[in-house]
Length: 302
Image (cartoon, rainbow, N blue to C red; front, side, top):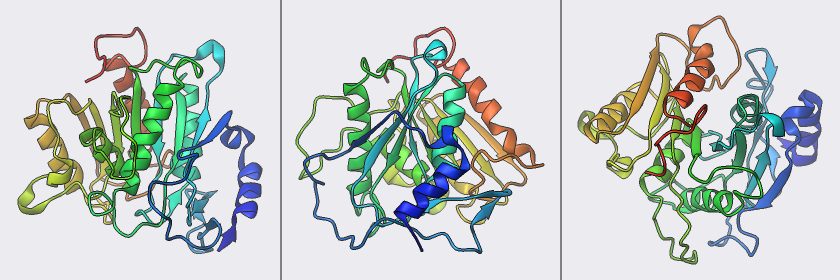
């Protein structure tokens, strides 16, 4: 394992723009809602065997007991006012912090979108609904974003959620249970529902009998959704995207699904020779289609 200071040095060595967030805020400045069971400092559990993905170093982080929201703003002249929470994946054990985090922020900034990178608590004993820490962190991140919307020059009605793998499951849980009330969290009147969601190779969306997992069952108020997955994803399996898309269709939620023959799992935005690595262009077009980018349209807040 690599210590956090060493991780930060590695981050700085990769690319200055990927690591230069403008703000970093604690999600729970007065302490987490639940007592932490994590001992020891944050570390990078990446090993030599999984350090290189698509020819580049990958940084992961675990033992996150102090969840954070890091704000990456685009150039002021190109700021569209749109924003997105980004939830890296890692099986709720670790966070793939650059390939599914800071690199996503670089891409969003290139579109004029503010990136709100969420370092949520990991590892966890289970995830929502058995463990509510992840959903509480996601709700709090969205509420902080809307509270600071004017200060950060973002439109509170154009804030989405982008998740990868476990982070995609978390985004779906947030979209479905934005009004969940944790027993140790003070009630809030600030809406935590995303205005759109992008789910990349999601896990835990597939239930029994070929149906969607009932804990993330879409409703007519689920926000517009973009899904990407590879048929040969043997980690999360393509059925997660298929059943969730059908459930969105049944709920009459606008959705776009892209399935590719090859791509596997955990590819992030890193370019390869496979067609799936061109998904960011499809996503950018979709954001224009639903009027998150370009001339603001009637999407509003679901």
